[in-house]
Image 1 (cartoon, rainbow, N blue to C red):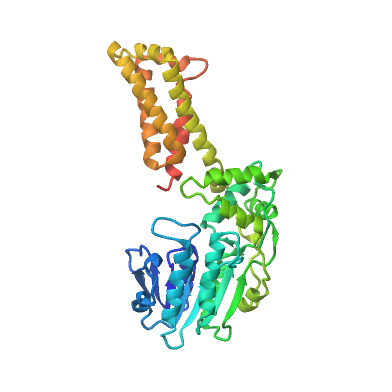
Image 2: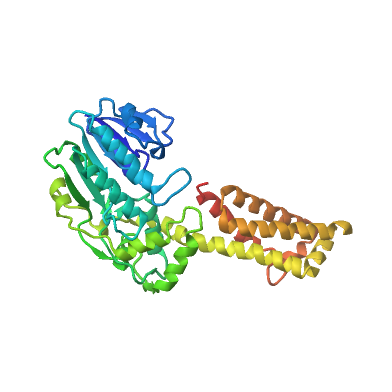
Length: 416
């Protein structure tokens, strides 16, 4: 069959694409930025859902298409993208365009909890997209996943980090979850391509069992081989405050809406998925593996490491500028000309402030490299001009060694 997969570069889209190709289908794959490298059996096309709001916009993408699998979804509004367009208006235009095709089947990925009166915009806009498809005359299936576990999934990585932390903190008022493994979800979507007897039906795509969120984290923790811990519930007010603050951080998954969805719970009957797949669903006890332990632990403590570094830079700046005597005395020992002492001290304090702020709001590999360069440079200067500082009982210079090690670690694991 000739299949159109929208959002093919996303987590679900990639998994579906691999399975469709393995099954011998030809695929037209769309996303905002297609890969440059060609792939056998795949026709990659650039398509921005934010710009495909009318049926005519979809005509060129639907030529000779037998099945459409729409996997596009965003968790919040962003530049050039809104949930109402991506989840409702653009899919609605796609579904209307599909009605002009002979015998076209549409498999649409929505979400468990999608209702028009839901407490979050994500769920409400998903429900509007579902309604647009249900009003059509198409052969359709709406698949509503719950929490999806994938080794490289954004939410999964967050939960693995939470599970790997000691102590293990979790929202005290979180509802029950029923996570489904990405393998099961992708297999289901591909199964529905040819299961024409399943039509005009909503299928909740959930895992084999529901469990409290706390127990889900403990299950992931156990899968990573981390067994001893005392789970610590975080009160609702404190969690809400943290979500409100984190919402201003770039790429943060913790937001008031996501917290609302977690509190609401995410469960349904899994019988339909198991019947369609003809096999048992993967249990959450099989999700995590021991090989994920180190990465999850490092990721869990990375925010605290960044915070500690930011405090060091900002505190150093305050001490240097508010109590300059010690800094001026050290500069005198380096044999720097007297006229350069104050400008050097002020410049150093300014750089410290800049590094402290950027460490909190814009961590980048270039930032870690700049900090490494600065620390290494002034440590070398002190070593040459005032080596006795290495013998100081409080280690003001020798403490640069673990800081450098931490910065090298952050540089290695930073993705940008």
